[in-house]
Picture 1: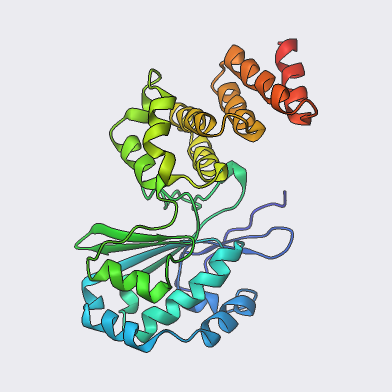
Picture 2 (picture 1 turned 90 degrees about the horizontal axis):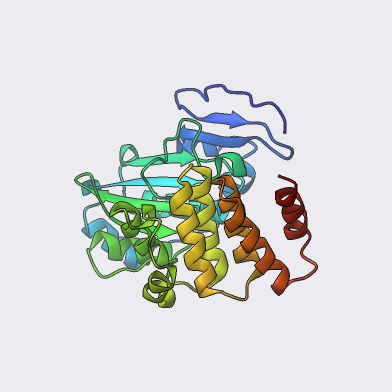
Length: 286
């Protein structure tokens, strides 16, 4: 991996990390940073070509955008962020949203610091997918849009600002956050099958909770990550990938026998699974 170079972008606190393809915009930044190259290549066309729906913009104006603040967590390396971020900023401008009420935070894509800011600015925000548009009123989060809109950015935002019922994508994350907050996921004695039943209708694919588990793992919430992976394996008992991830988490926790059991299960599902074979060989040597 190339050496990281840190420097300020004018008055912003953005940090640039030079990768193999283009520098990544990291840390707190401003919309003006996005209008500079190389980000302007994707930001300006996305902003210029998006036409917010006029009657919905009128609803946003009526809701009083000055009463709200928005924190946008994004990855300049992320295709979803490159698509949705310019559009959202166009919507906010059209609605007359005060620029001082909008905060942009760029995060890493490296698995070593997965979806983290350079100074852990995202801590406590429970970001599992980017972009994430978090809406606050009087300092309290009143809603968020995860990765992409349910209807459209302006329609989703209008529902949040008008305090209408709104359920973002990846509904299972809401329950994960509740369990994180009340300590359920720190309890080694939880029943993953029971929790899986509670969340079953809110998880559409195995990658949803797998992504969540890895975010927790990379933030050193090892027990919580293990339990998320256990829940996922209960939901998808025939997924080699689910047990492979659980095996990795157990290994990080120093739970060798549990890790072996997971990798053995991987090979029962997929006898040719290369990583499971390699990890079992490593575990059996120790």
